[in-house]
Image (cartoon, rainbow, N blue to C red):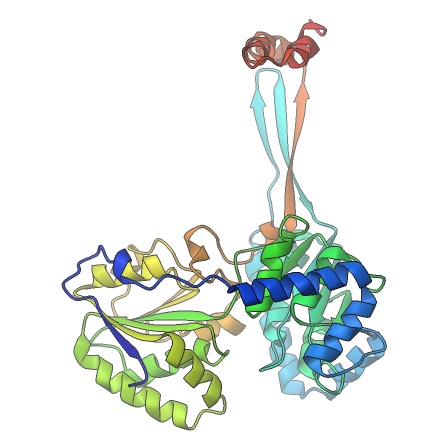
Length: 426
């Protein structure tokens, strides 16, 4: 069996106590990340060079990727890949453009409160490396920042053993208009962007997915720098299936997120237990010939689950507790299930809407909340790169209308200077 069976039949919709709880990063991860951050804080670029050599196996004279390298990469990538990057960028940018703010103001008696949306000055994007390259994450990070009006957008991504960044990632940076690219990965990249070094100027907001070390670095540095969106950690998927679900589609879609590597999650939830053996058979067959078989097997062994429930309502109750990054309603009649969703990063409806469409080119962002943080957070959006500033204008009539109220409340709180600032204007 590839998937571990979790049988919740007979439990109804109150199943929280029967579900595994998400693991917090272990002390080894937290302590290791804290040590990396301390090194970057103390030694800046020297620490970045040492850490890159330690973790990526290459000693770089500078972490900054110069424009000539980027231009050469754009020339080398196949023309169809460059065209695909540009097409995906157009879709992603168009989707986020709908988030552009409209001027808003509140008008009261002698009072005008304007709402100003001001972009941050600098945004830092992180694109993972190592097991795979992720030019799509470059596009996803940059598009909402560009729409928000961010002046400078930088990219950190791990170098290969020869010190190079792969051409597809550099081509994506070119397509997205990234200001500067740095060959730095892991927790040290997050630390460099948050703290700043002689080479990497600190940013205001950091976005982008990563492994548990990257996610833990964001957690530890949150507050020193804005961490946009939610906890974007290892990939997750929940596939809801019924009797209409083709077994091979359920199997391959479970693999879509599992192939990102270990620590992720791949759950099948169904109220039709008879379909599970066929899905298992397809999954075994597909994994046997998959190029990333080791990563798939690692994810399935740790968190591949076939969850059996009594009804569609019970399936959605489980899904809402798990709050998956990706939720596929791989059923023909999905509309009733959509109405029951309360927590998910992104939802894909029907047999022709695999999560991979959203991962690349549908438009909505693929940087999504993981580790059950979809309970309180959402996909990356333009608003994550904006600050909201209230501008208050008051004429004399408006002041007089509110003055006594402010004095009474200030005196009740024992804040006399607040009250006096009103009294002296009367």
